[in-house]
Image (cartoon, rainbow, N blue to C red):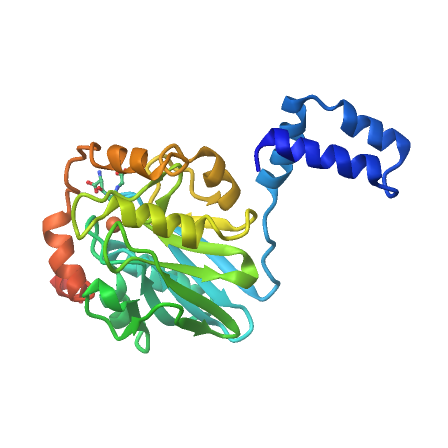
Length: 289
Ligand SMILES: N[C@@H](CCC(=O)N[C@@H](CS)C(=O)NCC(=O)O)C(=O)O
Ligand SMILES: [Fe+2]
């Protein structure tokens, strides 16, 4: 709904409302169009779903590939998952899991990454009992393959996996509805999105998937991407619906933008892709195995 229509609806509501005092009604009537938008949109923009008391969340960073990994846990059962771990950071992550008294149950990858090797394989060795997970359509190896809407459980918490192809065929977004969060991988980045010029990329599919499965979540859901090259760390559905410079455009304009990005290939591409098809195990430095 645009600002003008929204304001008209509110004016009608205000004048019919028995709940608002005369003074409040006058304030709303006198708000200019600009101030109306600032007042109502800003409130939306700052809203977040609060985590439940038994939910643990930790964002981790790899400076080499600008990757964010996420350690999540059930505080009561101590079962934990790591989303998008990075090979070189596996010892750091394993140490943290142990220090916090957690038991790593799953390592999840949002997709077969082209810019770093997944830490799944090494974490499985460092923390025996851990199992790796990836979308079935990724074509990559893992202990468990996810289909559309399948759930990954740790303690009493549930992650819903939804297919969001377009960056790669096998991309999945992981949603925890109760906590109001979604891990978007490279499908949606903060004020951006994953490139679509290799790994079965398709801008039209990406546009459709991001709009129908991510930006259709409630405005107050926090979104956590696999990367951010500016250190912004997180965003929300409301922010991206308003400020994403690509995804707020029409599909035709979006396709035009994506087909003309002319980005250089990721510098770790040649070793990352073959390693990630095998769950990242092959490249563990020998002295550290
Ligand atoms: N400079 C980075 C770029 C990596 C890259 O291209 N990443 C992909 C994700 S696998 C992407 O979609 N990046 C979006 C962007 O750079 O805007 C590198 O060499 O690792
Ligand atoms: Fe990627």
